[in-house]
Length: 115
Image 1: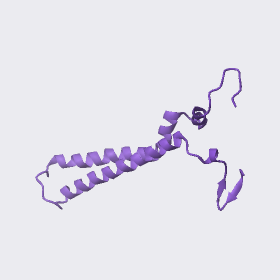
Image 2 (image 1 turned 120 degrees about the vertical axis):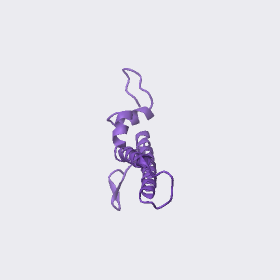
Image 3 (image 1 turned 90 degrees about the horizontal axis):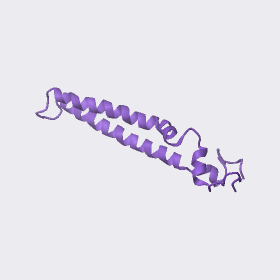
């Protein structure tokens, strides 16, 4: 059935369509990146609230800029996690996707081909 087209998506075997550990790792990194970006947004909103006097607070000195500093750092880190998940997967799992498939298959005996 490999090569048949159902709608616009090619239909293949389960092995071709299954997500491997590397794919799950990338998905987890992207999810964590979204959460970090959300926390950066909350820091930026807190900075804007204090800076533009939307809520009364005693912290209106230079320490208010620390909210902006943390928002920028978390935003940069979150963007790296969101858009650089493939880079982290390459660092952790190597450049080939075959390493993930090799980890899930049976070990080969030296000098003897696998099943």
